[in-house]
Length: 165
Image (cartoon, rainbow, N blue to C red):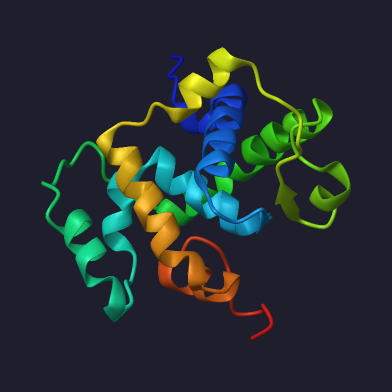
């Protein structure tokens, strides 16, 4: 039986990565940070599991007040995040091959959008976001101050114990 999910679609992932890069305020972002935000863009319901800092209490209420849907809950989000890794890396390599992200920085686990112009139709599609995605973008901007280790620790999606403090 074939089952499709956008989490495991390279082209959908490339679109999500471009969407995140176009909406984020940072010019350069660490690869693992982008991977984490892509996970939450794909599974916005999982944002309820993040440990929020006190100063983001208002943002926490947006996700905590969302009604539970047992069909959207993941049994093991960390495992899904790891399964998404090869698709995310392939999507980023795809974007680098078209010159949309800087390949030399990507080799150093940094993702930076280049100045290469996107087609106007794609730009329009990237700017169209629904309420769930808008809330995830608020989450990304709210957590922007955290270092990668802190983000990994608060989300629990990627291993952080061996990262430098």
